[in-house]
Length: 129
Image (cartoon, rainbow, N blue to C red; front, side):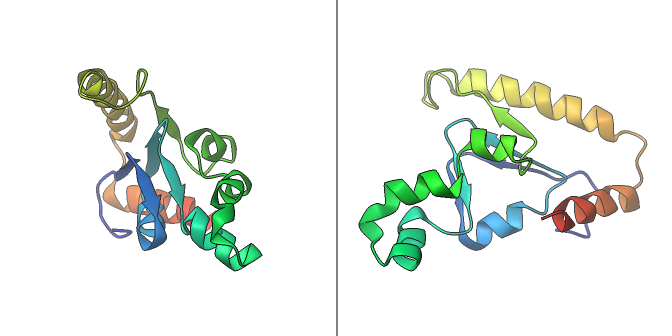
């Protein structure tokens, strides 16, 4: 994915974890739904390793900074997608319209960039971490 010559937007809609978290970090932009989580390790796994007690998963999740709000504050993701009260059948159209507008806006920012420039931006973004 790092060598693609087109814009890559990774959107986390639920739990982004393990190797998938590493793979999605390669996007030009990483966005999350407001109630999604993103981490290379589950809170249970983190608690098991750190404290040898997986029942401390809730505490681990707070220490790990895995929420969209935490990751935006830390500069790990670029955008938080609102869920309009929660991602349900009642809000899926509003979430989709919001995503559509944000994707269009981002793609307009990419106009005129070469494939090599887009790939280099992805590489540079990933290397910051």
